[in-house]
Image (cartoon, one colour):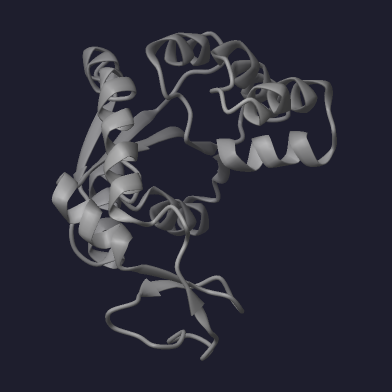
Length: 204
């Protein structure tokens, strides 16, 4: 099975990817991880991307697509994966069509105000990396470790990220809807509730 996970920042794509990975033995391909790998290893593409990042500019589609293309080339035809963070534009989606056939595109739908509330109350454990709600816990509920807030989890930044998502990525919804592979999931509620909806949709 080969899937794309779509949804606004904070819609829960990463959490659901972990659950899907365990159930269906799918590799989780995050564009963030691909970028970090290329930057850490000083690959030709990583060095090229760094020029734009150091200048505070977006990395061009061409470089992003080459990075993703190299990663997907590592997979055998019968190996499944989930793409998280790619494609972000229609141009990237068209490029992806030339690389592989997708079995589905899961769109995690959450209202903007719910996402703002979710992200501005998010805290991460310094010890184990567990994500929790700062309004509900003073220490990590998993290990008792110290919690911290990410710098970009402030309201202004969150709303700007949502604006960028709506401007750039929502065109993909119609792109995949026309191809009849878009699976829309209500991503409100607890992670296990959302996951039950995902499984019901995928396996029905």
